[in-house]
Image (tube, rainbow, N blue to C red; front, side):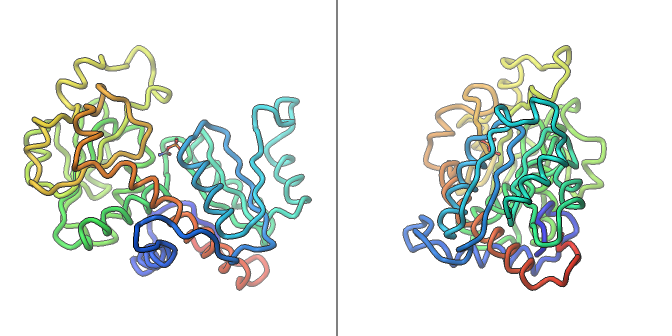
Length: 316
Ligand code: CP
């Protein structure tokens, strides 16, 4: 691995390698291990141009548990507000001997642009770009599914809600198909489904009764209002009535189906508290596994970078 920017077009063996490496960081209780020296002497810079609770915090914890030095650049208080360009900011951080940039950006493609601009000894991890990709979220979701279901063979997975604006859904569909899930279903109103949904390798449903029937995993998504034209915002009450997951609708899924959500959750909009806090919810376990999965991606990117020739090719 050189950079980690997307789950699209990556070989199954690499995705499995990430999951297996993450598993090596998890103790028997399912919590990530305290500390290993794999990134000792390395500097990780968190560059979050968009808000985050889970991704930013777990990347910081993951870097610390790998023994890296971590710098969280406060973008709002940085010199970008004085007109400094993104490239000039990057060059200055490289001058501080940064080894890795973890990038979240509101514009699709921004981490790819940065990966093309950094010097060969710097790795870039995509922590979510626009509505395009969120590959480490998808990998922690794959870890969670493998943990609870034992693998992907024969699994039916439903992803529900605002698919159109979701970078998480796109990365999940690619990863699930590569890892061999039997069927990936996208459920939502026509207005929140991408036109290329079937080309992505998913089956499309516009109602919960058919879409959730006999699925093993239900992944709920938030309405991404910040990426919608306010005139097109659906009514939250209507959305919850049709697509909100409550115990009644969960009965369409298999009896042992697990319920996932990348967070942040909006209770009473896409998910009822009775489900979010219920016995089939693994939402907080996803967060815990995120530390180990991000440790895996970061350690693999640094070791790929250390072994890459000068100007080495992108691993992703
Ligand atoms: N799932 C996720 O990306 O959450 P944050 O926006 O809090 O990082």
